[in-house]
Image (cartoon, rainbow, N blue to C red; front, side):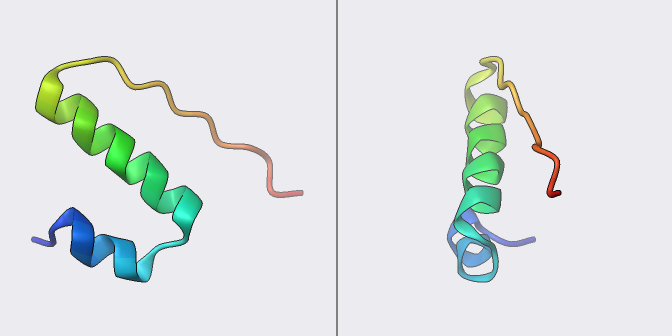
Length: 40
């Protein structure tokens, strides 16, 4: 199991932002809305 800080070293900033938002939502019980754009 890795901490958020460990994941941050290996992820792009955008991907890490999504991961951090999900972690915060899980921690607080708040809703988290995610959108992935088409890479094309």
